[in-house]
Amino acid sequence: QVHLVESGGGLVQPGGSLRLSCSASGSIFNINAMSWYRQAPGKQRELVATITSGSVTNYADSVKGRFTISRDHAKNTVFLQMNSLKPEDTAVYYCNADGLTYWSGGRWRTGSYWGQGTQVTVSA
Image (cartoon, rainbow, N blue to C red; front, side, top):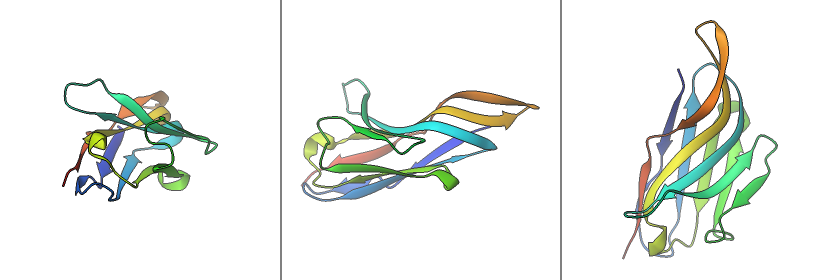
C-alpha cells in the first residue's frame, strides 16, 4: 500500500508565506514526478508545480517567481515553498506522485497516487 500525507496548510495574511510538505510511504522503488495541484471552490483542479526524478521543475504562470517546488528523493518527500501569497491562492492543495513504483503482493506495481489535501487560506 502507498500513502501520501500532506502537511503545512493554514491561514496566512496576504504577502505571507507557507511551506507545504508531502511524504509518500510504502515499499517504494521509484517516483517519476511529484506535483502539487490545487482546487478552489467552484473551480477545476489545476496544476501548480511539478518536479521530476531528475529535478526538472515546471510551474503554472500564476505562481512563477513566488512558489518553489523541491524534493528529497531519499525520503520520497516533496515541498512547496509559497511566498508573496495572494487571496487567489486560497484553495485545497493536493500532492500527486506519478509513475510511483512499489512492491506489493509479490510484484512491482506502478500508478499515480494522491494525498488527501491540505487547506491554504490567504486572507486579511
